[in-house]
Image (cartoon, rainbow, N blue to C red; front, side, top):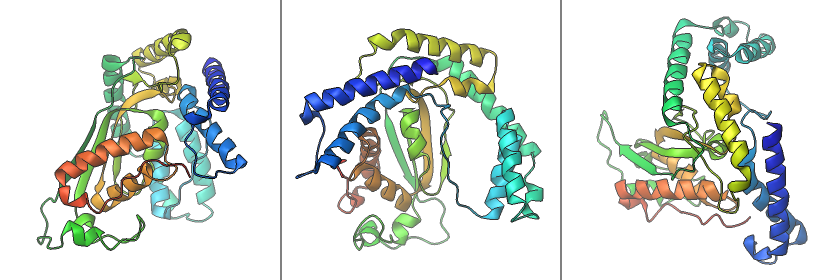
Length: 313
């Protein structure tokens, strides 16, 4: 982890200096003030160097949910094989007992959660052994829509559902709110997955493996070959031991499959947001690619969904 942080800091300093020497590398809004120029320049360096940051780095997580969902979250944590997850479950439960003592009775480890945790770990370990690599892999995107077996046929058009919005926060009609959508990427860096994973409703899934390792074109892999080889060896050793702690050896550049199942209105919001103003360059690439897959399936949405260009704020 120390070596990974050293690589991150070194690449950040190099890219920041490069952006100072070659200002054209950073896209700036017209008449940008000096403070904005500095912030966007530093974001340029951060966004490209961050793939060396360890996945296990301490970070903040904010959850706003009902007491019932808190009980489910704590139950899930308490059912995981990681001792630190169970310790977190106890700490959270002790706090929630002050507000929801009755629901907290349902927050302890439960057989179905434990069985699924074991099965998912076993599947991830098997896939990890099969696909473990530090090579950079291409990312393919996919989207699929379905109307499913509805109790009544949808009569509203997609245009009628979308055309009245002033922006992405506008209310969409039943044509998109009832349309089920699944979208996925075969190899997404954990750096991007962390943020895309928090979007709106639906089910998100990843085996959380390292099938490859992404670095942006601005970073030369050669100086970091030994670090990446050692990181790969550590991950392989932990996987061979069957240790759930293998996830802590991953860096944010690790590429893993990721899929999200939701409804079209939520997907459209996410696609417009993550290609729009100030969007991270990789978010924009990923969402643009999957949005075009969506347009292939729902061509009538093309005229009403605003694909951005990740223009600077």
